[in-house]
Length: 288
Image (cartoon, rainbow, N blue to C red):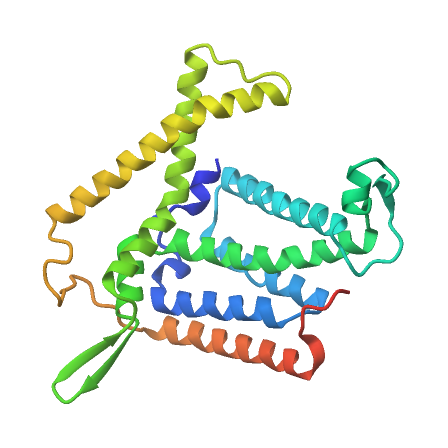
């Protein structure tokens, strides 16, 4: 179910028709704001600003459930970790292991849950969820080939009769595109291996020991399949003349249109407003 969150969906929506470079600028602007803004309600609004783009994408019910599950796991992880390791709290909400407990209590000084830490982790989770949500929108609405072109030929500078393209080297762009597709491929491989193991009699019901045993059977074939897939990509790239020439040509040329300029203006205004709010006192990462 989660593998569909990180795959390109071929649709004809407003977001799909936007230039991939503009979407990358939007993602970059949101990533900056997640760092510079520090007020909880602004972090929540920043995350909510990504949701309208998901509605424009019109995701399926299964994808919405996967998103809720993913964001719920992120929130739970941040809340638990910060409630255990929140150094600014004074009084614990619940003491799990007292400091007088032999060995563990002496080494850790006691393990406690802090309500202030739980609230801090809740709001800090919105930083991560904002970036993840925006990145998934970009991946779901941008074809991998267009993503590579956007990274390689992000901008064009003309000097005389020659054009100089500003962007990442093609090798780095190809690596980024491959890394984006790695997560869904790995999840899909895990699902295939688990189903094949079940068909051979592997029992997954039981306690934690049963799950650990299942992971042991899962690890080796998953690593082998990942290495095999990487080798196939390398062979395919060599067969198609990857890095054969210094200057590459492209079938599709990116060109900004009216909708792209409107979205770019929105991104600039949104980012500048966030930076201004951070400058006048709504920034920082200090605890609440």
